[in-house]
Length: 242
Ligand SMILES: Nc1ncnc2c1ncn2[C@@H]1O[C@H](COP(=O)(O)OP(=O)(O)OP(=O)(O)O)[C@@H](O)[C@H]1O
Ligand SMILES: [Mg+2]
Image (cartoon, rainbow, N blue to C red; front, side, top):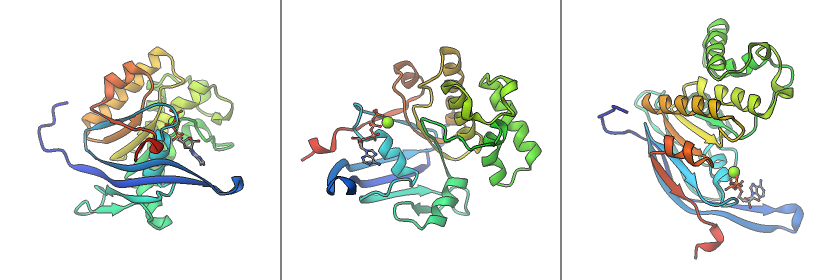
């Protein structure tokens, strides 16, 4: 990376807590995240680390507004709006969250939620079209990304529902990266990929960082983590915190 200018803070988390209440289990309360504080800036790749079950995926889901935090605040900087204001995500109304997801924050989940009957190429092109790019241009850029990720052309016009795990994951990664969101959340994006495709994803992630995007991710593969992380955020079991 050659960026010399000061890094702009993009995400700010203060006192974040998440407790699940299992209503169909007699209301058992399960504390998962507690007192999480961090900032992340443009050009950073913050990697969540910690044993299985410590709440790494839960934290990403809170940051994407999928899970409602039970304590604390999450703020994102909307660099697509004039003067790049901070927007509070925690407890934001649905339309604010949808706007942030369209313009500011992208998410590559571990598994693709296949949309029935939509061709892989259109699944990938969709985030660009949502932001106003014409269909042909969006599909051309989707094709370039799928080509780079070695997804065989014969699959491009088919819905991904029947694709292999690694093929679905590559569609998912392409869909997450294409929109150019300034903040990107990645939940084990290379988990089901072979070595060649892992290397492509590492290269794409490094390009996203060089463009000044802010990444927060989970990577179990040590080599991938070493190649992309600029900082680690270790999580520990919430029950272990006094
Ligand atoms: N929707 C939910 N309802 C109840 N409990 C949940 C829910 N989502 C997650 N949990 C619980 O929260 C804890 C943390 O789960 P999470 O998936 O965030 O862990 P993780 O750190 O990502 O683990 P892994 O490394 O195995 O992916 C787990 O004990 C899980 O059972
Ligand atoms: Mg997880």
